[in-house]
Image (cartoon, rainbow, N blue to C red; front, side, top):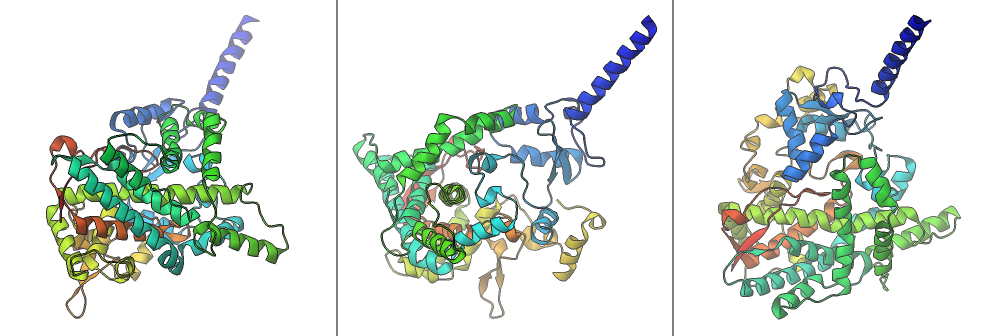
Amino acid sequence: MELPFVVGAVLAVILFRTLVKRLLYPRPIPGIPYDAKSAQRITGDVPAIAATYKECTELALPLGRRSLKYGSPVHQVFMRPFSKPFVMINDLREATDLLLRRNKEFDKSMSLGVWQTFIPHSTIAQKTTPQWKAQRKTWQDTMHPDFLRRVVAKHIYTAAQDLTRLWEARNSKSSGLPVDVSGDFSYAAFDAIWTATFGEQLDLANAQMQMVESGKEIQTKGLDMHSTVQYINELANSWRSSYFPALTRWRIRRSAEFRNYIQKVLNGSSDGEEHDTCAMDLILRRSMLAAQKAGKPVPDPTKDQNMRDELLLFIYAGHDTTSTTLQWFVKFMTNYPEAQSKLRSALRAAFPGDGLPDVEQLIAKDVPYLSATIEETLRLAATIAEELRSPSSRAALEKSGGVDWSLKPSAQDLDKFAPERWLKANEEGDQVFDGAAMPQLAFAGGNRGCFGRRLAMMELRIMIVLVVMRFKFLPVPPELNSFQVNEQLLRPPQQCFVKLEAA
């Protein structure tokens, strides 16, 4: 009697252990490298990733370096129990191929991430469905070149002018020492996107200038609204460093702070009074026309979850991406003075005279070195055997002439800031911008590519022209010149100090 009981107990333990391992422990995909120790933990790679983030405050670089460790451009990461591994592809050509030519095979992941947690009804958080296409179509006119030129450009230009005045005030009080401008780009970009969205000015940069000149703290609606929107970065950090991200996300979405964040942004907005003078005018008019055409009730923007989440995405992505890119831009200008000098000379030649170009001149003029500098700034944020590549990747290479981008002169010394890699001579011998010099995934690609690319490029163009024509960026001490990242939703530098001199 005892022997069958013992045998049964042993079998039950073995069965239980097998079930636990099958359900809770990571199940690696055969043939793809992974960390063997992580595969023996229920939490998988999460402890190592959380520890890495706390140590170096970014995830992208350490995860990318795993490919070097494994000697493979493809590896897998175990992010949570009860789920399949994440497959990381660290090869630019294959990643481009997936985005541009294989989007029917690989749709948007619905794994619970930042956007699915905070704005689940926005297009960035949805799969590519007819509803997704209809929602994006509602907003597409906000990125139309005519709307950007007629409505948005002037607000960006005003914000850029305010930024230069703020820097003049900071410089006058600096006694020749470097100043921290990491928040200034965020204020200027938020000023621009808020006014373009709601037709209402927040004057964030001007408020900062008043504080610099008076030495006193002030509080305005604009500063309060800016800190409210930045709350999303705090939320991202809280779950990213968590051992149990799903539980953390669940807790965040049910917190009073999160509900207040959503409502505060919506309450802080106001509708433009004139026809199509801001993005919300345009969206509300399109929504009304679409509802009337379909014979449906006109949606209430305060209760429409799709419109609410898309609006939050528009505001956040429309300013924080630009702010982060501009922070890196001034660091590159500081550390690559030759490129800075070439850019300023190109701008002086394109816009002669003592003053700054007006907004119409600025957006109409083709300046190849300016376009190259912007592209190189966006770029700085592996080649495998040809027979291992996907058929669509090989077909695209053959169609392009059979020369892999990594073998081109433009692809050499990729760790250096070199706008020249984006230039080529035309038939007349003039240098022109070559956007196809090498693959560029700053805005992703395919039908899921960045919706706001035109807006971002316009913001970068206007702000870069004004600050470079107004200031020289002088060297700063090494202790203020770290290139370490402070990864949140995006990857801003930990330090963004500049030493300014009138240009």
